[in-house]
Structures are given as C-alpha cells and as structure tokens.
Amino acid sequence: MKCTKLISAILLLCSLQNFAQVYTDKVVGKRNEDLKDSLKISNYPYALPIWGEKVAQKGYKLPYSAGLSVNYFWQDSEIVINDLQVGFNNGPMYNLDEIVRFDKSHVEAGAITIRPDIWLLPFLNIYGIFGKANTATKINAGIWIPDADNNWSQVASFSTKASFNATTFGLGMTPTIGIGGGWFALDMNMSWTDISSLDKPAFSYIFGPRLGKTFKPFRDKNQNIAVWVGGFRVHISGDTNGNLPLSDFIDLANAQQKVDDGLTKVDENQTKVDDWWAGLTPAEQRNPSNVVKHNTANRALESAGNILATLDGALSTASSSSVQYALQKRPKDMWNFIIGSQYQLNPHLMFRVEGGFLGSRTQILGGLQYRFGL
Image (tube, rainbow, N blue to C red; front, side, top):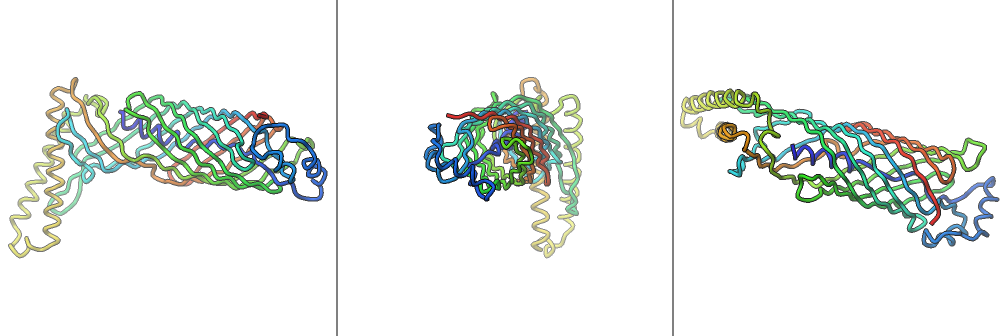
C-alpha cells in the first residue's frame, strides 16, 4: 500500500549516514616532528580545500580533497502511526485515531548508496547522496471499541505487507576537528525520497555526532584503523496522504466476514451503553465521570460503525473501490546508538563497517571509499 511505501522509504533512506572517517588532523607529539616540519615547508598541490595550503603549513595533515563511496545498508525498524483518517470512494473522511491501534509495525530493508564528496574547507566536508532501496513493510492494525464498563475490545483486524523500490537523493555536510588522531564529527544531511506513486518526494533530515580515534598499529604508516561511537537523530516530514485501490488496503478474501462481525459487535456494545445510561439516575447522569464515559463510548462506537458501514458498501464494488487516507508517521525511537570501524589500506582506499542498535532500530552498514586529489 502506498502509505507503507512512503514510511518505509523515509525511515530506510534517511537513516543512511554517509560520512566516511577521514578528517583534517593536527599533527602533534615529538615522534611526529618530522612529519609536522615537512608539512610546513611543502607546497599543497590541490585546489581544494580552500585555504588547504595555509592549513597544511600550520602542521595539519589533510586527506585527499575528493572521494567516492559505495555503501550497502540493512535495517529493521519499528514505526509509529497516528492521527489516521480514512475515507472510501472519495466520500467523507473519518478520524480513526481513537479506535484504530497499530501493533508493532516494522520495516525491513536493504539499500545501496553512492556518495561523492569534497572538502570545501579544511574542516568542512560536503557531499551528495544517491541511493536505491528494496524494502518490505508489515503493518498490523485493529479496530477497538468500548463497552458500558469502558472495557475496550478488538472487533476487526487488518494487516498489509508491501514490497517496493525507491530512489533517494540528498545533500549533506560534516564539520570535523581532529587532533593527534582523535576526532569529532557532526554529520548533517537533507534527503528526498522519490516513489512513483507519490505526488512529490518526501523530505527527511538527520543529525549524527561521532567521536573516534585513529590508530596506526601497522609498519606501513599509510595504513590505520579508526574506531568510533556515536548516534543519529532522524526527523521526517510527518504528514502523509494519498489514494490507493481498496485491494491494496485489505485482504478482500475474508474482508466481508470481518466487517459483518465488526458491525454486529458495534451494535451489541451500543445497546449495552444505551442500557447502562438509561439505568442511571438523573444525578448519576450529571456526574462528570459518567458523562465523559458515555460520550467517549458513543463517539467511538459511532466512528467504528461509520467506517465499517462505509467499508461494507465499498466491498460491494471492491474491484473499482478506492481508499483515501491521511496520517502522521514517525520512527518509534528518534535516536539510535552507533559503533563502527574503518580500515585504511592507504590514503586512497578505505573499508568501513558500522552497526546501530538500542531502541527499536537495528542496522548494519558496509562501505568502500576511494579518495583522490582535486
């Protein structure tokens, strides 16, 4: 279904932090005096970064000024959906937030991204993101109604699973600082996810701090290993609305029986609520807690009855019926913890792995980066 496609793509692709762990490093320590002195007297051969030669002559070692990375990313993430409104065949929209409950909806996906980057300034990297994703999303939902004792029970359940392809593009920047092999980076990017069934690409923004250290345990001074910890915060455009065929929304094979059973249960509970209210004394009917209980039950039962009755009518022409929807969506947890490592074979070639965990999202990333002077 189209709304699951949008949610899946955003949560997958906005999670693709793409900063590779190279940085401008302040050379310090007595054993590095020769390197520091050579940097001060050498001519910097590249046009980028701006002020690269001045910074190098102050004892900073700069990475190659341009790069190209290829990353593979996998994740499993739980999502939260609320403020749901649904209508059928372009009829009235019903707010179902009070009666519809979602049960552990998940996105599982894999993606490949390409990331070109340049060091615009010695301490500022800017980059582009281009990605392709394959993902599967499973959403489970139920319609819940109260009885006269304000006990809520499920009267109908629906589930949907969607698999699809998506394309993403974006821009980002990473301010960094490095001293003696230790470094701190703040990765920030904006991306737009494009799906053919949407009117316009969906927007997302991420912020990801990392703190790391680079070690040189090898005889070859050009080889090193970096390790880091960090996290990122995901913000996505929350409003989603659209139109899709009824067959994409529910399983038509047993939908009619579910709707009939749901309508029967709504009628039974409405009778119980009416009988309970009629049995109260005038003083009890004026009691604020009873008023709230009565109004809540009537409102929920009316909403459930309306949506089930409308769906019942739509099922009679299921092949040509459509569903209109609007909702708010977000990842269950905005922040995720990250731990990663990178092996540098030489200043041109690096290999990277990274894992994310804690909260409701698990992810793994592997990447290859090639750098060159520009």
